[in-house]
Image (cartoon, rainbow, N blue to C red; front, side):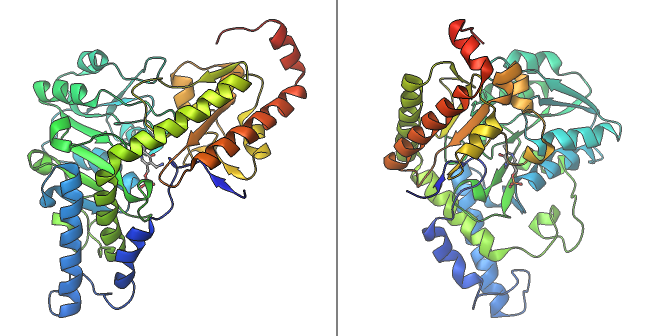
Length: 395
Ligand code: PMP
């Protein structure tokens, strides 16, 4: 067996069923969906409308509430900075959590430099934001609460409906980065009750460079554009529509939602199998994140006396992650593992296994075999390991 991909939170392979519907829009149907004067434009516009409807259906909203963006980073920026810049914002207080994606954390830091005050809520030792902490943090100055639906590193599913209900009762706008939730857990925007939510196609076997911000009707006038120009996307995001990617995003949403339940069962069974095999073979192995309320394809482990980078390198033909791909360039310990209270070697030893649509049982068993061999080898070289095995400690 050659290379094995276990990094589905970072990105996913494109589903051939998605590529099939995209292909004509790279070739003969290349029109600009804003060209209202000819058939090339009309067919592109029709395709965008159809895809918008597919995305809206998958998310339980209306087509007009879907604003296509280049991905979730831009969607998060539009939701947070776009609502900060709205003239009717009210106060200048923003609430986020310590485990948000960098695209939220850095946007919050950017706004702090422009007069916003930011409360960054702590999480419990499984990475969960307690709804009471949200309620306690809201003030008369709060204009937005932005809490992710599910964590991209340790897979924690947040009590986002409860958080949204608190925001609603207090009249505060609520946004959720729901990138990792779509297609993995039920996420119907209206039943969850958030005002805005961000999504990205490349996490659900769709193309890269396309995503959406859902802006529910009630939130529409609380937001201003960040990208100026031709007023596409109801004036909220100018720029020529990426038609093939939008078409692919629509199909990817349709498939992800239709296959969600069966896939979640299949993938979580493989994930549990991997965990059980590793646990049986390796002592001093610690699960990061919750054992319940966890994304189906997520397993995040720290191995005592094993550096994550060394392990990832020894597993050269197994693609795993030692952090979130978006932050690994920073070379800092994970802010998420830090937020859940991991310290010393367990903080530096976190490995994320991300399973998904094309993961097989054979691959799962092969990954387990290679991880066990690599951990045993690295530990045999570690002077600390000999001491630890004589006096095992709890984390
Ligand atoms: N939020 C979360 C939770 C993510 O996992 C990612 C992708 N790593 C993003 C936002 C950014 O999405 P995109 O790649 O579409 O900009």
